[in-house]
Amino acid sequence: MKKKILVLSSTFPRWYNDHEPPFVYELSRRFTDIYDVHVLAPHAAGIENHETLANLSIHRFRYAPESLEILAYNGGIANNLKLQPLKYLLVLPFLIGEYFAARKLVRKHHIDLVHAHWLIPQGLIAVLLKRSSGHKIKTLVTAHGSDIFSYNGPITRKLKGLVLNNCENLTVVSNSMKTAVIEMGGSCQVDILPMGTDLSTKFVPDDKNQNPKNIIFVGRLITQKGVNYLLDAFSKVFEVHPDATLQIIGHGPELEPLKLQAKDLGINKHVIFSGGLSHNDLVTKLQSSSIAVFPYCRNKQNSEEGFGLVLVEALGCHCAVIASRQPAIIEIIKDNQTGILIDEKDPQAISQSILKLLNNPEKRNLLAEKGRTDVLKRFDWAQVGQSYITLINKCLKE
Image 1: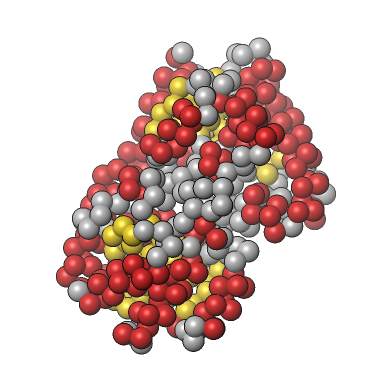
Image 2: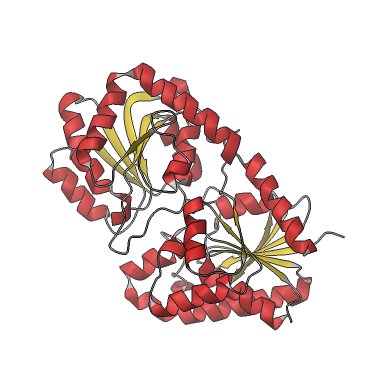
């Protein structure tokens, strides 16, 4: 008989080709040949309470009238709270709804292991489920970055500590995150397992449709992504290459200030703000671009990137990548071998790097080719999925 797993996540595709990040879905569906897998995610308007997709039994918990189920999705919980503080009123109902829905599934389906994505709130829910079951179920928590490097108020730090000292196993997506967990005093077993993506059939090159003058950024439009520095840099690139275009893919609270900045710099007609895209459309945009830039920068709380999955996807599509020199990023990019690393908050370094690649197609193609070869070996779902299965089997035997 197959062991039974319950996956908890606040981010999960709501429908086919949704723009919500698909990595929890993609990872979970790779478990279904070996385990019976149930997924619990937040409900939202227009989606089913329960459905079966790719052999996953997907359950969506209710936490408010449908018109008010607006805490998750469309940028994530943290971003939604920042944009609309009144949504804090939904946090407690969200936690209560998720806990009781999860407890019901654990009892009904005799769950053997709970796999929670993000320390808070899902990791906390997993620990509470473990206690309420008399420690009969196993817990595996996957941290993605923001849950380690952000949310550092006194209450959230205590809650994170509770999770780190009461779950049996924790996975992080980079060495820098493991170091941070150790510094926080967590007593759980910590393994480094990156998130994967489909580099074999989806994020693949399409050189016939690649435009050598297309530059792209993909990510949430928040200050830590450094898009304002990219716009400053592109204004200098545009002086040399007036046929170049910059595509900004994503949404967030900085959208309108960035549009105003592009207008003030006189480049607004050559900067395309595309908003959030479906995953199929994102692939097409990456395939049509030759250079991808990720000028990440630490915020006032010194928060940094946990793992740059979108860098991996850009490399998969044969983009030459320019990115900030942060701990998690240097685990993906080897400077001047598989990409170019730059200092944070340095528009001049960004513009010089872009110009170097625009002016030297051979250099650009060599970086792109080596970059794709490297990430294909390390981050394709075939490798990542098997690593998680090996770890889950180990957790179940302990």
